[in-house]
Amino acid sequence: MDALFSKMIKAGSTTFFMDVKEAKNNAKYLTVTVSQPAKEGEKKFTKHSVTIFGSVADEFISALKEATTIVNGEGEFTRKMKSGKITYFVDVKEAKNKSRYISITESQPSKEDSKKFSKRRINVFNNAANDFMGAITETVGHMK
Image (tube, rainbow, N blue to C red):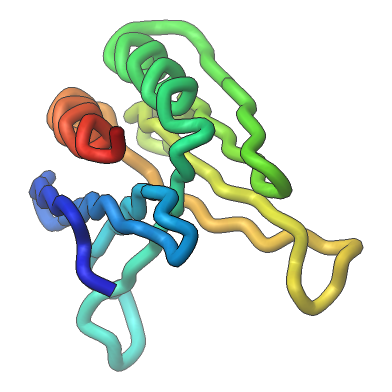
């Protein structure tokens, strides 16, 4: 499926891709994909993505703005949002080396087992948070 709008940003060896697409029902949604060099195995890169639907986009951007402010300073942050059966989490976390990052998680019931959940997560480290925020704000603007 072709994207209606795409944006790419690089942060060191990590690349973020943001694509606005349109579903069969004409609803627009955003897919954020992070690509990083693989640490092991035959693949050269690993990719992870989350999909944000229009019904939660404004709340999602608001949560990211707040998380971006906190990740570059001090304090804790967590925000939970729902869109249908999907739950999104935006958290500020600290890595083992004390660097801080924003964790974006998409959780939904597993298709194989309704008692389990399928989770997809991407992380945005503090050195890329401002560029990421600018790019995702621009991209979400194309969903409207």
